[in-house]
Length: 477
Length: 95
Image (cartoon, rainbow over all chains, first blue to last red; front, side):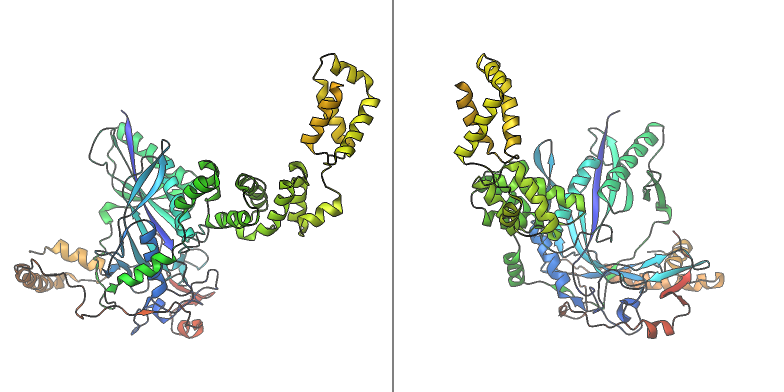
């Protein structure tokens, strides 16, 4: 039997705000336990939530960026369940009327841009953290994270493989960081996904029963977890079993998913509108202001790089992989006029490799766009060869400074002086009359010998094109 | 809508309320009475009426995104039943 895989994702993006969604406590990561849990976050009696404007504005930014509809009026609801890291006994979320409806994200399927539809995106608060070790049979609760603003982004079940799910998650990750609403730090839990996975016989309309894999916080684990879950469901059905709807957790150490809770004791969250919060109203002028403040979106920028700079779609895609990288490239382009391909090669080549090697983000780069531009200008005007430029790049990376100073101090100027190159060639020919004779008798392979020797004689600094031309002319006799 | 004893027990479990055996019959009667009232409400024709999410016809005020709370952990934890290493301690919970 041939099976079709059906996947939908729910993504929790932590919104980049200074304070919590309903209180004035800090959201900074890494504080000592409970130092950032205020009376509202602790649900002490008599407190009331007050909504953070920035969290709402981030949701609007997202809605506009994905072409969704921003609700003029949306409603906060209580999602009721008991767990010690949720002191109120309910999570404030949105249920019937979310702040954003619809929209889409494009992924590549068989070389064609394909829309993955979004169902909705809603605002909610995060819960605290439970620590289960080291407390003599008790659990420790840290409520610093309680009340941190989240945007839960729900996709339609439009993905057909683990690879597509990862592609969607990556593009979503790029988008939320690009528009500045989420720092995207997956290790710190700022961007985490749940995957709903089911399989059905190819051609069947109705969906199979789905399982939800919770808390996938790396792209690699997401792919492995979904692939495992697909195999498990297919093998189970083919051996006569029936998939039961349940929540599962992925165990990376054993590369398998295990049931967390099954439908029999599935939660009944008994949602109802939160009487502590009035309807959230967003007027058209606010939406217009946010629209005007949105940066050029990654796909538009990619298209512009192809159309205006003559870059290949691949190069343009690499350069728009992140907002910071694209900004770096644009800053470089502003300084090195008209050399898009040269800039693209250096950003996606040497610079990306150096950043990767040292584990740095683009904004931590040890070479600024201005410094790199200084180097690229010397390639442009023929002062240094590509090979020498790499040496200078390393010097810039390790020691700082500017390219011209390094070229001067290390004597790395390319030799483009015709008479100097001619002198090298003449000396070489005088020293190797046998090879000259061989060349002239038709053994053109000997040409490489002369290039190598001449380069060596020049300390690697001979302008290769000029050297070749002079050698050809002189050897021809 | 008729409420069964199973419904009642399930609701009690979800709300973490202990219901003794001799309480179920009177509770069932009371809650069925409440649901009876809701049945009457359900009978009203509400076509063309916008769903109500709040009794006040006002909209949510928003606050600026600034940190206004200082660390008052000492005071909050002074009234907690059990704390250790800055954490609130609770009976062990593992799903």
